Length: 350
Image: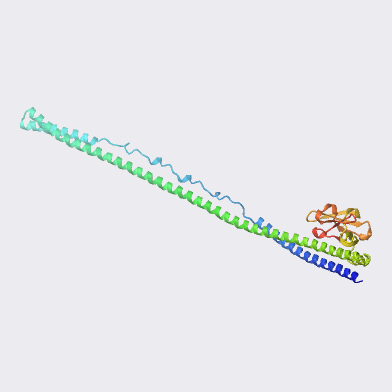
């Protein structure tokens, strides 16, 4: 009797420990799922609020209009050079006066024609010298005026060109600086936003790992509970302390409708029934109807069990041949069971 009691206690402890472990794992998985959802929403928000890509040169303006045609300022300062006609006219007048005076003198003095001629010639030479001097001065002055005008026009054009060069260079510098500034600001904002996205993405990956670990912990707790029951039953049977009825009674007390049992082989060569997971083998079911699809794309069905020992009434669940293999457990009876803790579908009676 003490061996039976020890086996019962060991099996009960395994069941309680497994249930507590699965409960803690469920809580951790739920918390991780909530954190994952929060981080996913934050990541989606960051992605949607990213700045638009800009063209930093979209406001660039054409500054060629600042350049002006200065050809209109070019003139020929020598085009209006004058001839010293005043000097020639003055010279002619002086010759006429000289001749007239000579004739008057000849009449009054009665001098010979030869003296008058000599006097007139002397006067004419004197006036010719004055005329030539005036002509040279006028020509020189005209040339200087033309040269000065040419120099002034050249200086004005050079200054106009300098001012245009400064304006165009400054306009190009300002536009280049504006484009560089926009590029810098865009790059700085982009890097900052990308850093936020990377940080949240890393946190999201961490939450996903935590959720996966919690589900793995739940599976480990479940298999540990089953292993503990099997070990206790094996020890009891090896000691020859009785049949498997006592353990079977303990097992049956924790079963629920729809939860089936599978044979487990023990170290002592005995086989007993232990509570496992909902029977989800298509061969066990009838009146199967597709009633929806889970968020992860799994088909959800309503069905009844052919053998009512698995449960009476209508149930909701999946088909074991349509789900990931890691959630399927093959029983010694040849039928599939499903670990619903790894799925986003709830097994329940409806």
